[in-house]
Length: 410
Image 1 (tube, helix red, strand yellow):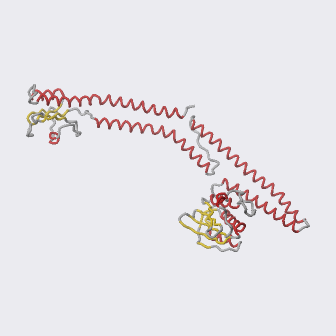
Image 2 (tube, helix red, strand yellow):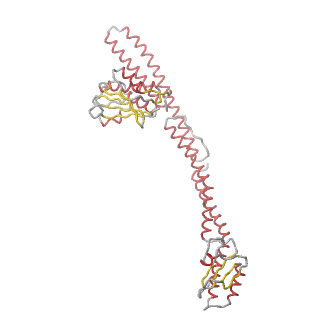
Image 3 (cartoon, rainbow, N blue to C red):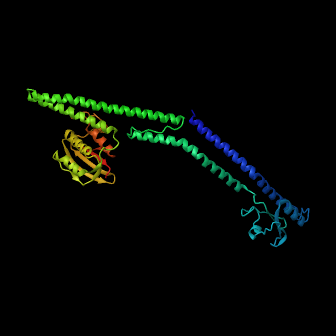
């Protein structure tokens, strides 16, 4: 098995080797031109000293001709007044005014060297070689080599990290509820082993969830069968009070089974099974009519399952009836953040220390009336999140509770 750290290590070592080879090739190519350039510059300065008045060792004509012959260059000797004293244009080159006036290393064409004599004359040498390089040329070559290496090494690093990116996407999809999410197992290193382990874990989680759903469905079916027989048996009880109490208990058990099935189904749902435009104002008005309440607000459409949204409204209204004496205000609002369902009551409210837990399944606040199974608000949050929204609790300034459900607008 090839280890991932070996891949990174070998990629770095290979890059260093290629870079060193490129440096060697560049140096081998430019060493001679660089040496020639340094030699021409030194020869120009030395010739200027030889032609100076105090150190003259040979006639000016001899020095100029030797420079032309030895350096394969065009040479001009200019008087202090700007006129030409001596010149030799072996290659047919003519100096421009800018080159003569500004002696030194020029970047236009081949480099031109100039040296000022003690008596004010100017000696200018223009090499005929076109391969003379200087520091800027060498820096540009090295930058080009580094850029080429960067382009060559990118596919290697991209291949190493792309599999990690695919694995991260698979983990995100699994966390969002897509239990069928799997990643491609590519290679024989640690990333491939991690991808295979992720696929095995995701498959195991999917089987466990499916088994849990099957268990709930079977238990619900088996529980409802004896409940049906008990409901039939209540008709033969002699006591009307005992019959009424037993019927009520059976209805509560039946409702609990339905809520357990619904919350189990919503746990693994990523989006509603049905999706169509729903007018929240009309839907809220229908549900509020069952509890003799009116709805205010504006007509706002959302995309979702009308049965689930109806269940959301019904649970909030039932919660207000059981714990707050009934809803005092039901309204539908809309703004840039989405559509809002606001339901208020004038009950005792919820203590601050347990407000973060009221949407947990089977949670009951201390001192609360033991009504219901404790799944109503949990189902409200599940339905809201399946539709891409959420629900929050707020305490009213004048006492009581306020539940706000926010859903994306259609």
